[in-house]
Image (cartoon, rainbow, N blue to C red; front, side, top):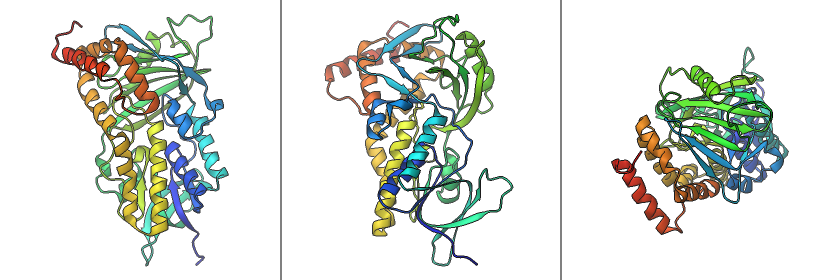
Length: 400
């Protein structure tokens, strides 16, 4: 029997989280394998903030559009524009963007293979043996490799997590579905479509518990819906959204759907040699559904934790990935979770939520926090004004 190949780290899943982790580990000199199942594109609005572009050295050539504003649309079809002062939000196509990240991992020294993870077992000395099916993972013989450490970046409903992290199967999800359509030409009548603006619909008739979106991507546009209600007819809702936004006459490029986690898992590691990141760990922001920045950040933190574990042999290092992430972003996730629980509960509250977005202080602080991924503490007077206005809406004192 031939001796199995041994890697310092095997990263399972090649989305933004896994590709980032593989890149960082390869740069650190660790023998790294990036194992990814080919052909899948995650449904995603594709927005990336300036902080991501800076922290992860993303070339501007990957941007297919630059959003200069967002527009919130209430149940009564009231529209609130939120312009971005002195900046933009980059828009990327996930198929191209994710492939570029995987290529960078390979260029940095990681070995890259296409395949579907099957199971993790252990040999006599406790070393992990990873079994996978190469290529598309269908009708192939299972192959095996050894790994000193494993990073599970295989998305929501992660198979790595299911096999190694107790309680991971209890994670709640929003189900997202979008259609990538051809963007309308300059002469086509599409109501008020704007290729530099992201539209967000807070309407129960489209999504009873989340939101819908129309995000421009240059030559294409993402039209999507999210809902945590099992069996909710997402395709029908997207069809209605395309009709109301004037995009029903545009051709469809592709359709994609997937579950999106609602909160981070309580534990990301198995206490031995496995750590999770990205959707597998639940690093998607509540309320907004933003995931790319948090996925890549968690991938970097997972790589740092694995690197420390490989250097010291102390498996307690793996737990630092979640600790660092929650220290940096846990408060934001907590606030956004409360927002989603309260404001998305019904159309009456959504109407008030959109009205709050008219406030210049709310707009300024929202964009500053989003663009820089930090809570804004430098403007106490503005925070006080927002608090009392928010309280008025919560109590129903403010007019709808």
